[in-house]
Structure formats: C-alpha cells, structure tokens
Length: 161
Image (cartoon, rainbow, N blue to C red; front, side, top):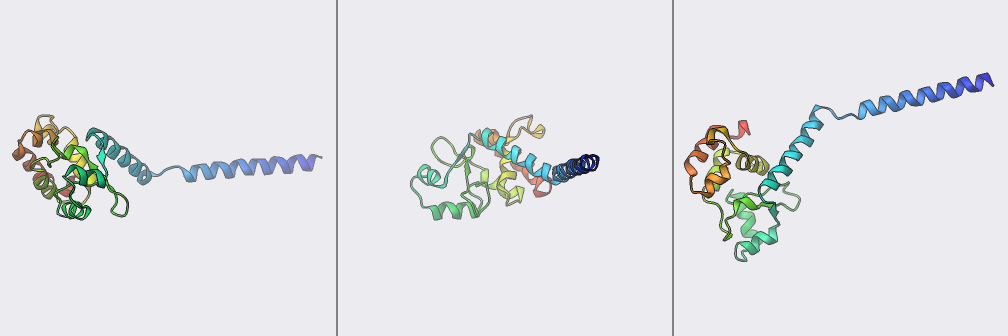
C-alpha cells in the first residue's frame, strides 16, 4: 500500500511539474505580445476611422466602378486598403468624404510615408500628433490643410512608422 501511495504521489507530482512546465513554455514571448498589441492598435484605428467598407461597398460608393479599378487604385496608393492581400481587404471609411470622393492629399501622404503597410498609414492618419498641435492628420486633410501633414509624413517615412 505504501509503495502504491508513493508511486501515485510521484506520478501526481510529475504530472503537476509537466503541467507547470507546459504552461510556462506556452506563455507568450515578447514577439507574440507585440503582435497582439499591434492587432489591438489596428482595431482601435479602424474604429476611429469609422469602420471599414468592403470592396463591394467601395465600388458602390465610388459610383459603380469595377473591382479591378479599385484594386488598381490600391496598387497606385490612391485608395487605402488594410489587411493581407490574400484575404478580403477593407477600406477605412475616414479616407472618403461624404460624397464618396477621396480625401484630398491622401495619396501624397501615403507616398511620402513610403510604406506598403496600410495599417501603418491608417495609424498615422488617425492618431493625434504633437507636431500638428495634437490634431489628427486625417482631420487636417479633410479641412484642406495638406502641407503640414505632408511635411510630417515626409519627415517620418517608413522607418518611424
């Protein structure tokens, strides 16, 4: 009986140790935490942008133009799309005026940022910046105040996004 109790004790102890080791090994490392954090920021930025349109909605909003025309505009950085290319991409609402036209200056800013990462561009547009008197770049663009946003975008470039 005593041998059986000791064997059970060892097995239980070993199982607990194994469970503890597995739990510790499965803890998220710095890279995994950074990935999750960037996803949370992207979600905040999309929410601040008023959400995002689907491709079909952008086609309709832009007066029934084709999907191919939208994809071409995305490639030319005239329209901002977020998400991986192999999945259905989304189009942040903030880049469109109420009439469906694109906010003036957006393409110039996108090009000045020198990145293909739509979420990085969205983050730049949606976050208040000290360099812009704590205003959001998208708000300045909407008001036709393109120069300070463009100057800031050129000074940042991809390296600081």
